[in-house]
Amino acid sequence: MWRHIAANALTLLTLGLFLLGGLIAWGSREYRAPGPLAEAICLEVPMGGSMSGVANDLMDQGAIGSTFIFEVGADYEEKSSELKFGRYRVPEAASMQEIVDIVTRGGRSTCGAEVIYRVGINRTIVDVRELDPATNRFEEIASFIINEEDAPSEYVALKEEGTASFRLVIAEGATSWQIANALGQLDILQADVRDAPPEGSLAPRDYDVEVGDTVSSVLRRMAEVQEEILDAAWQNRADDLPIETPEEALILASIIEKETSVPEERRQVASVFVNRLNRGMRLQTDPTVIYGITEGEGVLGRGLRQSELRAATPWNTYVIEGLPPTPIANPGQAAIEAAVNPDTTDYIFFVADGTGGHAFATNLEDHNRNVARWREIEAQQNDDG
Image 1 (cartoon, rainbow, N blue to C red):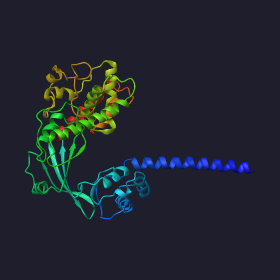
Image 2: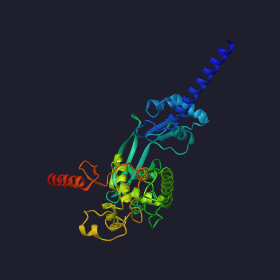
Image 3: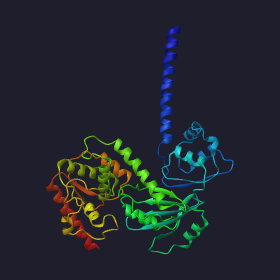
């Protein structure tokens, strides 16, 4: 009898430990996973505040999904006693672990007014935002285009006061020349760069900057991030790809980036180019022809001519075999990951479908029908325009 009781007790203990281990593993994943916050907020930690109070505030603002996991995670990392008072910007989708790090790291206030430099393909837009105390959300108070409009007084005042936070948002698909040139025009940075970094070497994403930072230091940070992204993607690449080096993956990713702005299409587009490379077909992609004309300096600003499609340049994939010698832009992380992990398809053609996406085909007959349909859409758009 006692042996039977002991066996049952051991079974229950084992089951309990198993469930506890599963619960801990789940809680750990939740603590590190991206959070539910859809837009950045300003979090105020009062003097003498507690991690429990911070957790409740975050829960009320929809930044975390569990106050319990937040507090337990902070305790486990021994950061509950390191809470620093101040006002902190909590970025969208921040994990609980990231938020704990933000409120215990301290440093300058990251909330209040924020200046965002949006470096795009054609221009740089400056958005000035300020926190609305009623909603604890940022609201735009001014916006202007660098070198096309005068800076508004709100921007000038914030820059002189030194109370705002400054952030760069680099567009995916911008070239290294476009990025370096745009940074050199920002009046908060010291322009100390003459030559653009190698094409494709800069990671397009958000970066916090401060007044007085040098352009070279910002570009160096971008290059370090891109190298980390590329290394991680290459380590997790699919088998039997027709590319042999991380640099070739970066070249392919840059073409994918320029060919589609639809996130769901990246791996499909990647599959087309992988299939073409595997079959010994030329890539025949217009963005490479454009890069052969501009070499990344500026925007072509018009359609391609037939003579340009036939012109021999190192990047013209209508003429050359395989990949061009360098990337044609700076691809984002998603495009890099798509290049090394494409969808498995039989597609070898694609063309615009009029919705912003593309129509894919496995044979020339279907592709020609898709092209004809796109020509009709183009003609209708021109008539409407």
